[in-house]
Image 1 (tube, rainbow, N blue to C red):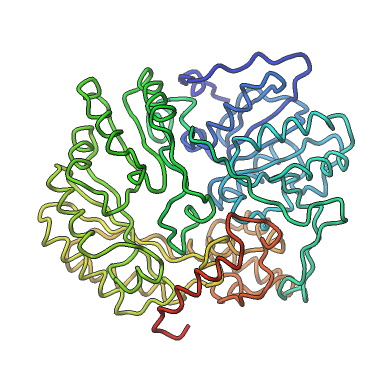
Image 2: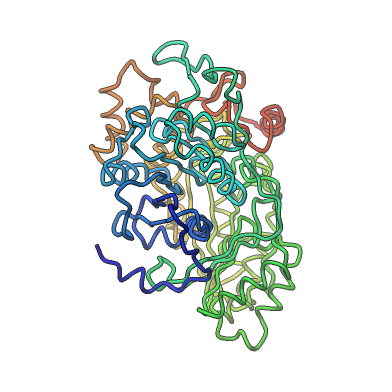
Length: 540
């Protein structure tokens, strides 16, 4: 065990001195330290726990850990990427904790999990967790620990039943999922009895003081970066976007009460600042924030900004970023087709995209990266041709500006209007089409793996029957072939791969996450879906 990484950390909070008989807790990130410590969510939850005197918290990563208790009471995981489930298995085995919750006894710790993957659709992982925390941690964590304190010395079932009463805490073992047949659709999702809530509602923090880094370290994936959350959710509500729909409503950090104090705290230990959020430049006082960061005393600051809305790329923004050691900017356009952008509710005109590139160059930036997508519901080949024309026009409008198109395949996500659509099986060919056509224009194209998109869709739309599949694929490796091999072994015990990945689902069918309430009711999502499909020209 190498503890040198921990000694390089500069903490921006003061850990509490544990009281007598604290709750021994392990807080894990199922990946390497450099990845985990770069997760703002992991940092904030760790600090929140470490500042409680009634807890003794140790961190655990796949490559190193702090001294661990021999008999922990709580073991938590922050899950940010679907395929990290493999590392969850690895760490549970390392801790000698049974992988499945039903195999754990009173002497085993309660295993809880949270983060965007588990909040979106925890069902493929439900059998591996005793508790799943749905939503924002600001209030949820404190409520979890306080509730646990009251049943700390009770038997396991008493603990689970008590914790299931806390809003936002989902105890999967207390719900029974039945199916029309072993490989059929879900027939019902019911609590074990009337004492268990029929639905669990995602918790939403509504304050205006958002998250900021609690530790800065040279060993992070983004070396010595101090991250500050500028906004949460996104007002645009693109119909495929989990980051927008799952985290509604759109909230902004107070400039004077949150952002500037946080940045000043960060600047006391580093000169690298990262502004985070799904739509950072739509903060109502973003111009004022830019003015603050443009002051002479901040001329040594290195500034990074998450993806920004295209029509907010002004010469001023570009110039500020350029003067703060940023060489390019990232914008999400999804498609060069005006029709497709209307289908997904991307309120963006072609002129806005062209102007963003011009402004980026005028402001001194060297490059602009655009995010695109293939396989969007309703997409035709003509829409892809429009994307090629858009890139060609950008090259003409801003000669010398380095253009990059990063492109993913549409993957349906829970709690969004497009959750009923499947992955377009033509998407792989469409990525290759763009690769070929943009190569002719000498424009850099960075496609995401289509095979990974298939696996991501499987997990994002999966139900509890996938748990055995996940255990099998862990041994075969992280490839689509491994999943197909596992599927053959489990034939007849779960639906075909195409059902989860490619099929368009009936709006009336029971969804795997039906009992987990997101920000918007299904009826509202269906209205948004109808607005999209009304604009289709293709028969799906």
